[in-house]
Length: 502
Image (cartoon, rainbow, N blue to C red; front, side):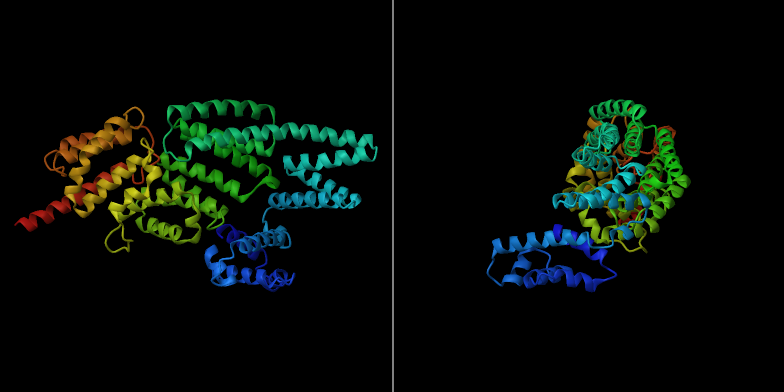
């Protein structure tokens, strides 16, 4: 049902200026059951298959008939996608050309099947011209393949040589594009669920970057440029070289500006987002804000890239002390319908962000009820990321327990926190995690207070601030700021206790 609803959303968006035509198309075959089914989904009267079956067939669950009806509905919707004004909905010449070339090739194939070769060849030539200009390599290969067959079928050796030359060249480039895609996909499969790079992941990234560099030097297409720069960004990111990440972003952005016919807002926004994240890691927050504005200009609200950007926008607000902005971003994202469709790891990260937001929100700002004791059960994927998100989860527990004054629970997790630090956090790999962990150990040892150990904690803070390494990826609030907040909360808690005892 979810899949069907999403396809219908696309269909209705294409007919939003002419809903009457959509309704006429739905009922054009006289299938009343199908028309009723469409109406139920469109009006959000059903959300599950069980509800739909009951409305359509009564209390008798006719599973087989319903499955056949659902299959017809899906086919009908897919057909209707092509009846909408898709070309006008696509905002850039690059996206329109991609749609039009694919449509022309598909229609040409259908015409050939029906023996109408002349109009088919005209469409294929048009599609090939657009595919070459906009560097849609796969479409150029598909068009050339059919044109080669037609030239041979008509005994036109000159045309066959012409199309065969293009076909061979673009097929060679297409194979390299696919190879680059695979190199990038293997990298992403290793890094998606973790904020850290283990030795195996770094080795894969290094090897794939080397292979990608060889391809990039020898073959050039828009697709190859795009995936090479994506791999290069991940390579320098894994080495902590965020200055180089920013340079790579600038190179690709300059390339897009010089080739406006290949430009897409989503691509420009993507590289602005990479740059924004690197600026935040380098604590260049003003430059990060400039990148954020570019993302806001380029991304469509509530679409997947925009949702990913909002996470970094939230972190920018948290790291610069803009708590009200962070609260607004959090509420906007988590209350939208698309939030439920995010991958589990992204939803878990927002759950972690919520814990830190709950800690820093002043009393006068509204906050959602946060169940700390349910928290761990809601972030199982992140909990397995021992060198990355797991640290931020444990830290969230500590600060929230201090916030509510639950010292008994703090005592219970103190030993596990020490063991976690000993096993997973090395000074050489994560110095900021390490030094902040040392500050927390002093805090634990001194009965959750810094009274009497000010010189030791000042020395620890100095070591933390002297680390030349950038912010950790999972550092929702810079540790220097977080330590100050933690001590303020602890001091307030101590004063309350003294008042009660007196």
